Amino acid sequence: MGLFVVTAFSYSRAKNSSQLPHNGLIPIAASPLPEPVEMVDSKDGVDISVDEVKRENGQTILAIGINNHVEDYSQVDLKVRSDLAGVKPIKYVVDDSASGGHHVSAELVFAGDLSGLLTIKLTDELVFNINVK
Image (cartoon, rainbow, N blue to C red):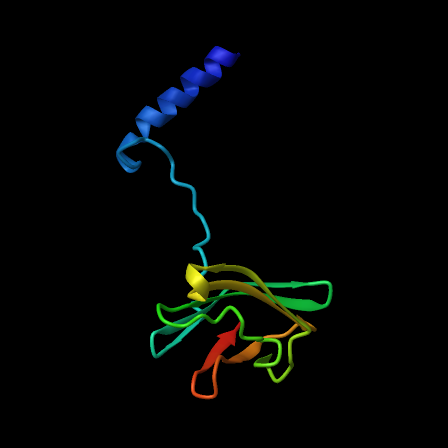
């Protein structure tokens, strides 16, 4: 029986090969991947990005990156200098501060399942706005 199935499959494959791609495999329809949403704002040589958004246990957790080649932003307390949809974060943790604070990876945690405008004020002049989905 196993030999018959293999033979029947081979015949079917050869019979319809003119309608198949060059490798003879039947394409499988797949759902298209969603377009990536870029969540970045740049000003005066400073880039702030939201690299990941998680919503769990009644909180919204944002993994952010702050990148530049001049200033050390690792000591700026974004807990008091940011908000998401008007809500202040309950926690701010710097995970990594490479190159003397020029490349900061951090986490902002907000109470609630939030989306909307994230505002980050590194200084009074450097204000960044990112739409968090």
